[in-house]
Length: 212
View 1 (cartoon, rainbow, N blue to C red):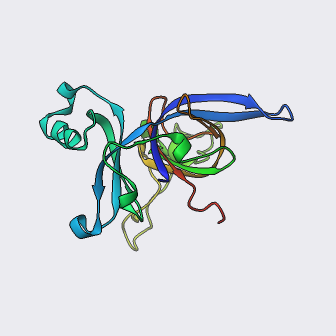
View 2: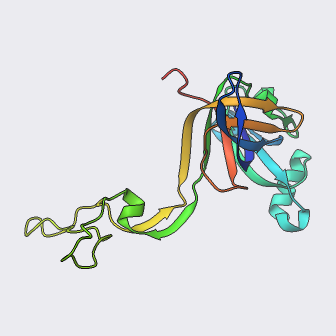
View 3: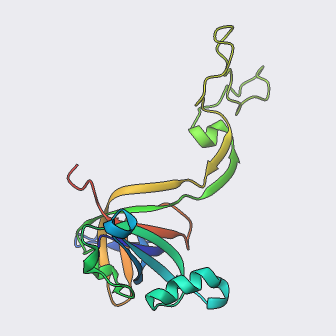
């Protein structure tokens, strides 16, 4: 297994052997439980379904409760699928911890939904410089300026950088250093920042481009 689900706790800093401050993000990673095994002969592909964060049966709903009961586990809040080469190496109800996935000194990829910023202008959304703000300039300091292309083609091209909804997108950070893995407390420390606010659900994988 090369993937685990976690919850972002926030950022802090630690000091390395040379007393240099290292910014890290703390993640409560797992434990996760295996809730379903998918195989080529029955589903068309090999995968393992894992779930994170137990919830009450009243909130799960009857279909989800039955699905988790079939695997012999309590209802879980977050579920994902992970492709595997050998699904027979896993069984429903199996518990996977962060120590089974990552180790200190390795690299990890983190996927999460970034913070939503709402409707934003071009200076905030696309880092536009803005227009002049001296004497004689109208109040257009933060406006994007001209967006058209004259009489030909007499339209605005698709993909033009303009104001709009910002954030709230799925973002993946690649090759983050794994600073520490605490299997007893299910705690993972990653160097630098990761997407999402505190409490965000994150998917942590072994880095796929560690040599690239």
